[in-house]
Length: 146
Image 1 (cartoon, helix red, strand yellow):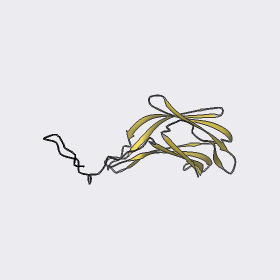
Image 2: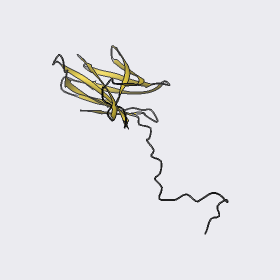
Image 3: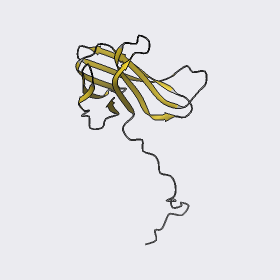
Image 4: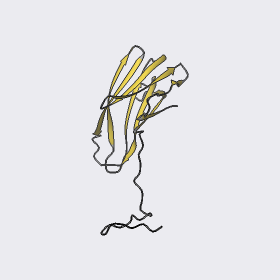
């Protein structure tokens, strides 16, 4: 069946590139045992990264970190330039090292607008593992351990 189009409008060419859906995941978080770069002590490193690749500048994530007894809270504040002399492309990143963590920790990641993703992390002397995954119906962060 040949479809009639209003005069002055053309039918969309099917060979055009469709809009890329970036999905709901905006960040990745990798948690694992590491050695602190300056003190050479063992630590637990939290590495945040945007899923978006920036082509003109490499930004840094601005994150406010709060630690209470068995809870770690990361407030995602936005992006900032890294102060590089030469611009370069890349994803925005942020790392934070904790010392002396052991046991179960409720980890809360909050982005602007009060959207919160939380999960439970178990830290032993040898391993870091996710005990309870994010339960939010549309999470904005993907988590993993190394």
